[in-house]
Image (cartoon, rainbow, N blue to C red; front, top):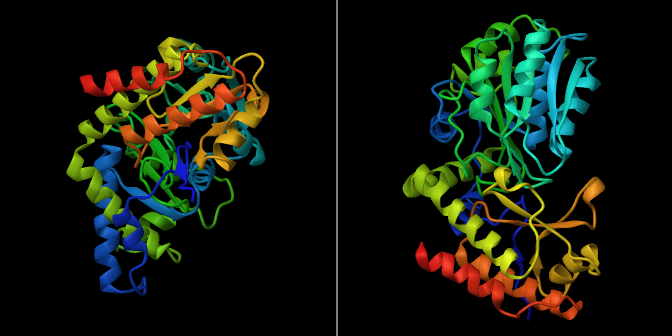
Length: 380
């Protein structure tokens, strides 16, 4: 018999209460009963986004919410800034270019955070920049960016700040309003502890002024339609009813714990994972000043087959972590510590990692990683 454990940066494990909520009988979405559910969900999302502005729900992955941000803000031949420090920063550029939007790309070395002053330089050089597209947590590299500092810079310009918080929201701090984030997008399968299928997007008053003038073609992802519907506690198209029911259960769990406690738990698990990795003689991939509390990216040691390592943990022992993407394929592995993951999941994962590395010939003191992680958890 083999149990399966999921420690990937999305999808993440589901709490039993969330799974139970999805199993409830379906209801029709154009009813007073669903209006109550939708209102609860949108108000709950405002709590997690830390915003007083509207938050919209789409039946899509987080990438759908990213596309919604682009098509609602931009017109063909507009110029925007995109910050590329990994696969998901690159996605902003790819979406923009698909709609004929000109992109001034800030290329950031993978494993490092963008320097906010680079954004400031670009904005000062071009007053016609419409938007700045950034990423809170770049899960392909395990890096977190300083969105607060970038927000201070963008707020005094004519541009709006757009943040991909798909991996970070409900796991690490993002004060949408206080940090001057105009559009924040997220998805259900990460810190929200849900299956994939819901995309979220918050919209500031500053952003609405630009949205009303934007001319990119859009239909399903039209935020103006979504706003008209939400004002009536409705959706313009058929929503993912069962996922929204489960979303309310997830939000309830997060509220019960409290956002600050959620952030603290993720910091603790991240620190334990990092200490374990270093105790095993392994090296973290990101620079020390850019480490994310959502996922830990680790360099594969010399002489070890990185792809085989991930495959063996998954297929032989049932412990699923993530490998590297694109140019990092086979060069790093990633252990997620977000959502419905606790300290004993981390201990189990480190134990499996130690076992497989030993089998693959990597030399270190067996048990060193587990000991280091336990010491962090004992300190609390």
